[in-house]
Image (cartoon, rainbow, N blue to C red):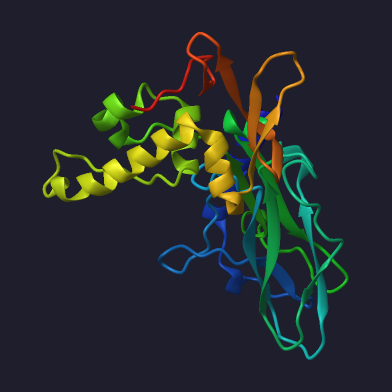
Length: 284
């Protein structure tokens, strides 16, 4: 039901933006404030902002800077404005998915623009499977009115840590194995980047770089213990499980809940990372 309300709200934003988003049409005795997102044509951009942690494995949080501007006159004193979470149109949880907002922010003296830091978090394991929505809105305060359209006073952020299969994976499946999000994440953790399409014009020129990335991820997954010792700056650890097995959990220190299972197989006297489907991750 909550998702239904969110989608209805986003549709309302779009219709509101279509009807009236020309700030110059508003004349008020009290200055107004809005979120200063602009498209390529310099017009107010009311689109959703999307973000993914997937391309930066191990990143526990990130900062999105929100542009704020006034519709009115600049004054020679600091002024307060309020940025609020729209609870009915938000699925993200405070503290788990984002840092709490401040009670108010400052528009500096003699200024008509500023930026507000929104700190989003990547500590929830479920972000690997689903996105969360965070909707913010500037509202009336002691120094600013809220007479501008909701569409330009509001912004929705949708973010996750979900990976999707890249187009180049199929060209190197003999080395990478069947696609899984865990395999993809381990590839990125090892330093891997987009691999070349060998059939593309001049594709052969990218093969040495591709083989370098493939060798790196193979060495990493065969012996993650040594990899951790050689790469302490990456902040990853292996923690022994308390379940009577020889298994470990692999995770970044700042995101201890986002784990990858490292399972011991006595038949071959070797550890294997396990993917989200319960299968071994093997790079050749």
